[in-house]
Amino acid sequence: MRRYSRITGTGSYLPPRKLTNSDLVAALAAKGIETSDDWIVERTGIRARHFADAGVFSSDLGLEAAKNALQAAGCSAQDIDLLIVATSTPDMVFPSTACILQNKLGANGCPAFDVQAVCSGFIYALSIADAMIQTGAANRALVIGAEVFSRILDFTDRTTCVLFGDGAGAVVLEASDTPGILASDLHADGKHVDILCVPGHVSGGAVLGDPLLKMDGQAVFKLAVGVLEDTARAALEKAGKTAADIDWLIPHQANIRIMQSTAKRLKLSMDKVVVTVDQHGNTSAASIPLALDSAVRSGKVKRGETLLLEGVGGGFTWGAVLLNL
Ligand code: UT7
Image (cartoon, rainbow, N blue to C red):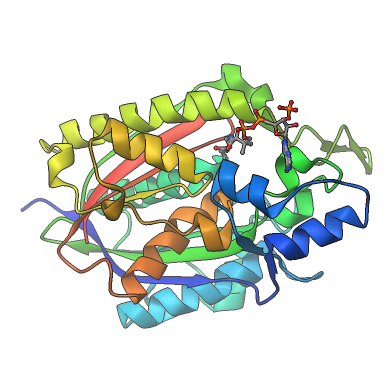
């Protein structure tokens, strides 16, 4: 009998400090940076984001999301035999945020590692966990996306600092006789490294190069709308399905206009798209599991439904996972 993997619980966590556009506009105005609620809403769909307080790390946000996912799945930290954290804002250079989180959670002993694929990180991590469960290398995985992007924002650059937020989402993925994950599709093209990056690095006890996020928004936008359609169609084809089989599209939450474009290209109504970018902003690797968990907990997305999760981000990386919940 074929072995599949299936999501048995979802969880998420947002740091309590919420900044509406008005809050951010006022804070930026005090520094002489001009922006407006109208511009942010019209160009991105974002109305608010959450920022973690000083001293709160990706592992702390991921820990809370993981606990919520474990509770939803009805299992404990000791039942986990694989832990993957997708993040581009790790607690330290090393060890991995996954190892730090594993210790905080008390899931010590199982393999734990980070995946770095920026905003596609959760899709990459979910695909890896699925593959490891299918081969029998793991039985019950905790897959987490956790970010504190507020730490790498340049608050003098209005073209990027209004876009991102902090948060975490998690799923428990278990071996199952029935699918589960139906197909996944992953890609990267390193020739686009420069259009979305944090170029700084640590060398000889100092940070060399700019440690803050740089983005050519228009270049990212154009690439994103093309690859999100392609990867959605590729994942559907691998599973022998069409866009008409999708109950819910849960895309990376970067910009409502990118989501509208993807839905239009796939001939899906926006009623079938889970949207949280308005309340969370772009939380990079956390955005998809955050959106999934909020849709599950609100009762919008139900067990048995077919979901297409898809992400795109720095690298350039992109990918999709098609699954039955
Ligand atoms: O998560 C990884 C993936 N990331 C993404 O998917 C992001 C993709 N890109 C985008 O979402 C959009 O390109 C942005 C939201 C970043 C920008 O939207 P846009 O419609 O592409 O705007 P633009 O860059 O063409 O800028 C239009 C104008 C410019 O002024 P001029 O040159 O027309 O006078 C900007 O200087 O808007 C100006 N502008 C702003 N104005 C007020 C840029 N940022 C702001 C701002 N407030 N915050």
